[in-house]
Amino acid sequence: MEQTDFDGIVFADTLQDFNNLRYAGHIVHTLCCGGNMGFTFQDTRYNIAVGDYVILPNGELGSEFSISDDFQGILMSLSETFVASIAIRSNYGIIGHLSLLQNPVMKLSPHDFRICEAALRVLRMRMTEKGHSFYEELLGSLLTAHILDLYDIHARSRNVSQLSEHTASQLRKFIELLYNGEYIRNRELDFYASLLCITPHYLSELCRKVSGRPATYWIDRFTIQEITRLLRQKELSLTAISERMNFSSVSYFSRYVQKRLKISPSEYRNCYTRD
Image 1: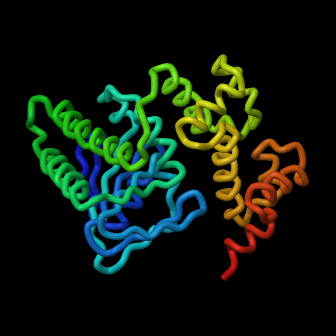
Image 2: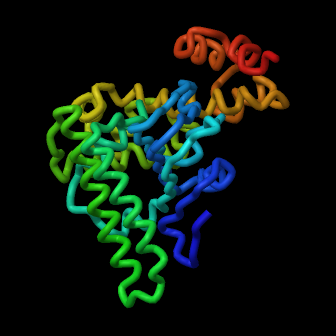
């Protein structure tokens, strides 16, 4: 793993090093250059091959990583703090973020693959120039160019337009509330709309416009993601999980899970832990 006293950008070469990069507050990028990689994201299994670019908006969201013997790739971790500091003048990031939470894999054309591979290799090479008088600014500029290319690739593949500053700000605040774990305490749409000083209908329409999904989908998405993580911890009883997630009763908790996963919490746990 390549790391300096500057941890805004870190590159890795092996799966073990890659796993060390997957921690909260970091965005993980993987460009597959040879072989294949498998991983689980939001309870969906993905298998990527040459030309696939994976972006995990939060490193902790991926699990069960595996690679083929001939896997070759460029693995990079970015701190959210550093990405925020480069202040890209585009509101497209929130569109891409919501899209990546639904599917973190972008399939690149041969041309786009060459662009991304070259950008990552240059960025990694320039990271060795620690004596550069404007080291962080240099890396920030190179990363900005690469992120804008990724925005362009994503936008071309989905034919979506830019967001207004107001819309992007509202959606960003909504998603930040979910990342901060507010869904554990509050799962009502009215609560989030009230905090944002907008109507529930307007919040849902903003989410639907950008992601094709209403706001309640995202509240449930974060909730179920946490519930399934807890269900995989066999030492936790259903009662303990229900209480931790602030459900009024185990029966209500079970109905909530059944409705969204189409199986009961016990069935999910049995399926996941089956030998």
